[in-house]
Length: 160
Image (cartoon, rainbow, N blue to C red; front, side, top):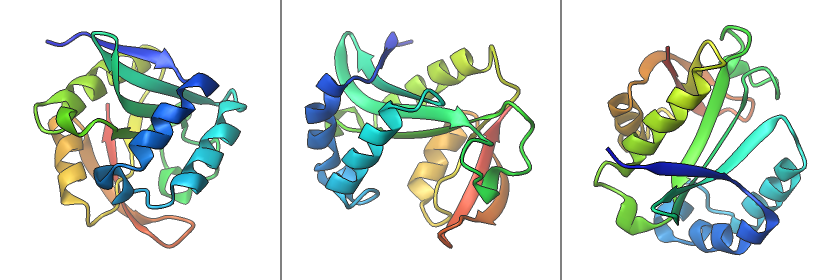
């Protein structure tokens, strides 16, 4: 078992986040680096969003954030129990993809969140089988297919 550490994201971390957002494997999910950075800067001012960089032996390699499922009125999460948390994440350092790190840090973060919330959810795009497989390995179960406000088809997955 690895020892993953979750540090609160700060403005000093933004150059690293920019680097990660520009990596080809991240751009395939988040193609607009500048827009994502602006959203993150905005979200850093919001106490309702818990933004973290994930480190292994103090080496940062991934980003993860979570928020209450009701915070943004996202229709795909409307049926979740009050107090549920929604996770969004990506691995920034390509060398950390594949050897089980995604599953490992997800399980660690979920364990922290489950101390205070009834359910944790994720919402990968329904066609992203690789991401769905990663979430399944971490213990998430498919809940239902849904459509986001922007019309994207989402596979809502939950971890109880």
